[in-house]
Image (cartoon, one colour):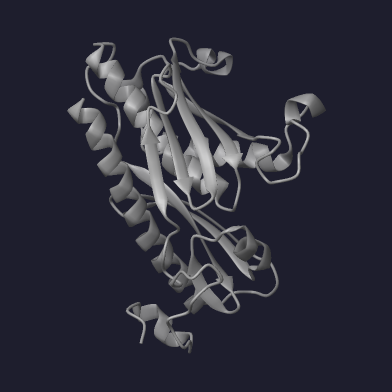
Amino acid sequence: MSEYASFKDLDLDLPFVRGDGRAFDALRPVRMTLDYIPSALGSVLIECGRTRVICVASVEDRLPRWMMQERERTGWVTAEYSLLPYAGGGRKMREATAGKLSGRTQEIQRLIGRALRGVVDLKGLGERTVWIDCDVIEADGGTRTASVTGGFVALSAALQRLVRKKVLKTVPLIRRVAAVSVGIVENYPVLDLNYEEDFAAQTDFNIVMTDTGEFVEVQGTAEEAPYTRAQLDAMLELGAKGCRELLACQQEVLETLEEN
């Protein structure tokens, strides 16, 4: 019998073992390597199974031009996302070569930016822009959620260092944030989909949550058939569990920064 109360309405014979041997509620192995780019103010290599993303935080002492028209100016946090040509196996043309960003890339960049701005005190940041660059060097599903989770680590490290340098008085973070994918595969709710599961999923969700249990964003689409309220509740429970585990990994990594 499942430990998740909402699963009782799904009539499932749990536990469900997936193609890679994981339980339905298990994350892929997670590893975060802090200061992966030594020259950066804040950086991390986040590995979620075979998905690997380099996240780097850079700070500029200026605002985007459109913000200069605002009566009350605050800081800004934005993101750029890139799937490197070799990340998915066969080579794909760089979007810079094509001359424009795909709709997918623009959507992901906006998601990362929204997720991180949702936990930053922009007024406390001052008239500065923090850029979060997320470069996917290997893609096996969940690249956008890994970018949010790793992006926060890079952002936090950069802001802590600005405090040490006396550029900022306090770290302008309200809370922490992480993200994970969930979905329905073969009628089972599962956590942290790899590429094969994502490709076959009947429903695919991305869930962004804070360390206080609040949702920053929930993206969800039924690919084959509509999902039920019970399935939605089950996916939200799995997403919350996954985000809690990722937040704990973040905290463990960032504690090493505080010690050094």
